Image (tube, rainbow, N blue to C red; front, side):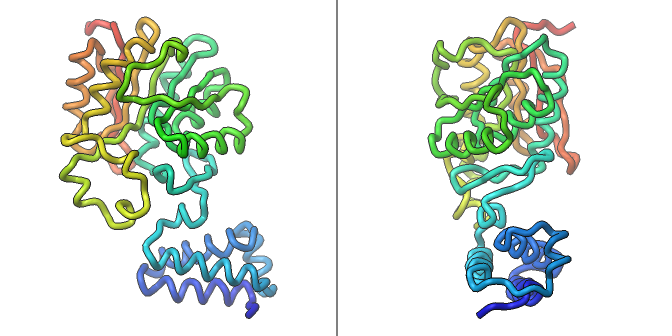
Length: 291
């Protein structure tokens, strides 16, 4: 049965209001109708009295059913906005979140001060969101997106192509818990948002995270710090002399992460907060001595 786009939107919003507040239901319904119809929000408003095809109606109905089952909007749309970029996402990668803007801004700011054509490694890259944001803002940076998941790397490669950055951005398989292969060479900076959820926290995660987001990208060991220990130790060999390491970390992990960095010969240069004023990221330099 075909419907006007406006009716399709109103029916979707009404269905979603069984599980969401009106503001969230409105946003989700508009996003789904625009996505399924291939229209921008502006085009949707202009064309709201046009009839939607049966295929579009079925697509919207299917998307709403997935949302009502608890699946995050980003996975239903298969795209999400981060740092001014629209990225492809799938259930093989974490959904890029505003929390990650803190480490992204820290990495970009430092990369702008590096020598010409700096090499940057985005370790545990997932969708590639951090490394791609660095490549977009630092026009001569050569960025390597690295992950242990081949499925995640497929998503990252798609995003590299989507943003036409193939000339300066590459994707490689790298295990952050193992010694880096010699072929990687040396980097001016490594940036990472590694898995950092503790064993106890894994049991308390929202259902939408547990059911749909990849456990491989979440669990950081019993205390959440396994990847920080490995990267700070093993990946010193992948840094140039006086190179930089930039981490995102979870709430309350800042002191422990900084301690790991200092124990491995790094000097803490800056600790920064996210948009919710929670400490979220650190920038450190290897080999530099405290003044």
